[in-house]
Image (cartoon, rainbow, N blue to C red; front, side, top):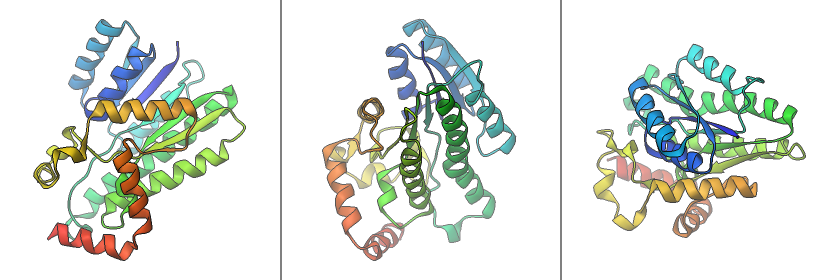
Length: 254
């Protein structure tokens, strides 16, 4: 039975990835900061799906914790067939309104961790001749108005570069670009207003995003944008001058 490792697995999209992969008979390694939340989810998954579930508590902004996860990803005795780099969060503030420690922690989780874990996974999977890496980006990658958008743009570009480098290895890399999703992501006080700012039709369910992402992995696609409306929106955002998206972002922040 194949094993998938999921970061940010305790809630939101990470938990949904766990449930859908368990239903597809994958054993799981769940990574997040909250041991209690992971233990609860692991018990539920074992009972409902009958799969093996390993819990790995780690704060990916901590270099030592990241290396612990990297060691598990690259363990030749317990191979990982699918890596899901899902961990992430937003702070909802402009860079001039935050401190370095806050920005560095976000950078470590959104950029350094996917890079390190993807590198380890790509090497191990290439040696075995099979595997897949799934990185969670965002439609915000098409904007140029926040550090979060910049980080997610990096995830998108990095994943496409990795997919190109892995050609011929039977290992794939996929970036999924969700739009607004009804998860705990927007429960942060600085992001909670978005619940009221956007209509119900703009929001996707975790089930939609995860099923679309996993289908793209099975197809070997390098990029997938869940839902037709967000795919169209992404195309429009790519065509619009970045000077306009920057102005729109500035207007929204005020």
